[in-house]
Each structure stands twice: as C-alpha cells, then as structure tokens.
Length: 316
Ligand SMILES: [Zn+2]
Image 1 (cartoon, rainbow, N blue to C red):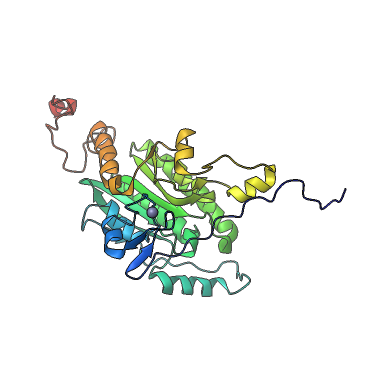
Image 2: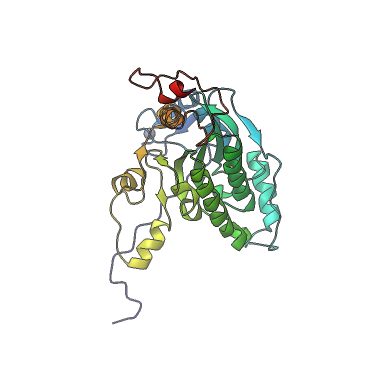
C-alpha cells in the first residue's frame, strides 16, 4: 500500500470567493443566479428578492440600514495602523497593502464607529467592513471597538457591533491577537455598568473576532446563512478527516446549536434591534446606572408594556 494512496474521495472544493459589492445595472445573485436590477437590489437592502441571499455590504451601507436616518455621527475616524512588525507578505509590504485597501474602500481601516440612535435609543455603534482586508481585526479595529465600549459606558449608551470579518489581521501578529483580550475585558466593564450589548453577525463572522467580542453579546443576532465559526470548515475537515454536516457553521446551524439567539433578515434588522433596545431601555430605566437617574430623557411616567406606570415613576 502506498503511503500516498488516497483512501477517501477528495474533499469538496472550498466555495469560490465572492465578488466585491457588485456594480453596474444588473447583478447576478450569487446564490440562485437570478439577474437583479441594481435599484431593486438596493431597495431590498442588498438581499435577493427571489431567494433572500444576503449580499455583503460595506460598513457605511450597513450603518444606513441599521441606524435611524441621519442619526450617525462618526468617532475616531482618523485612526490609522502602523507597521509594528515591518511585515511583508508574498506580494507587498503591509503599508502598501493598507494603502491599496484604503484606495479601494475609501476607509482608513476595517471598521466605522460612532454614536447613533436605533429605534430612538442612544447607541454606541461599530460596524466592520469585510471589503477592507477581509474585515480583519488589527490594532485599529480593536482600538475602535474598545473606544466604542468606553463611549457606551461614559455616555450611558447601548452597544451595538456588526461583525463582518475573517478574524485577526496576520500582518500585525500578536498585536492583533491582543485586541481579543482588550475588547473582552472592556465588555466585562460594560456588563458591570448594566449596559446592553447587541452583537450582530453578518457574513462571515469568524476566528479571533468571534472568539472575542462578537460572541459576548447579551443578545447575538445573525443574518441568514452568515458563516459563523472559529476555524474554517476546510481546516476542520482536514484535521478530523471527516465530512461536516450540511449547513455547518451557517447561521441557521449555529442557531440550532444555541450559539446565536436569532437569525434575522436584514430588512427587519433595525426593527429587531430596536425592539431589543426597547426592552433593555425599560428594564434599566433608560440605561440608568444602578443608583442614579438616566442621563437621557426617560419619561418619569414611562408606561410599562401592559399600560401600568413604571415603578420608578412613583419614586420620583
Ligand atoms: Zn437569489
């Protein structure tokens, strides 16, 4: 018997990498092949009207979908990555790689952060951009997430983060991995401050990001069919030498396993997050600290869902 003889049929080829956000008048759905008119696709928030396939969208587009109209104001827009390791991949140096990504996306790095409202509730929001170096988390993405958490605490806002990422950025090595600990530690502070965190997982939400802040939400929502996992399916398949179950690491699969709380269509995302924030808003009397009133306009006679006045309205 040859050492190199293949006992099993070859493992399935990995999925083709998906194209960037489509341009031009017509776009072919990457799932069902339907030719879609650009304006129809836009009206459908970049989901296929025929099969509900969710196209990947840039961070700025997602912010428009998720936050209340004209409510977003950006913070920490000027942060840019250094090149701490003098890293060079097979084709170019890290600074050149950054410059190319900046030119292609109009972003400084892979995440937009700022303040906004969702369903009228004050949020500190951060949205990752998969088109910027695969949405990878380096020092800038990690720092912006960290500052978003700190801002949520300082200004008593809910935290909402949308992940769209392949994981940590290899070009910054250990400095990328350190962002996992930094963001997770700050989320513990957010929890101690009784402030809610809603984590939204877009396609894909993988590796070091999922293994840190993305999986630490009080509520974790995934978009339909979003890839959610730590190691990629190919690596797992090769390691265990077995084929994986159908739909492995897709949103619906991890929902069934209890890893995410809901799978929500993009068209309903703002409404759904708004509902959740409403629940947290009422149960914390307007995101108030334990022993002090809310810094926001939280009506004293805020009625509970059943119409009875809230308990705190009696106290004040
Ligand atoms: Zn389709």
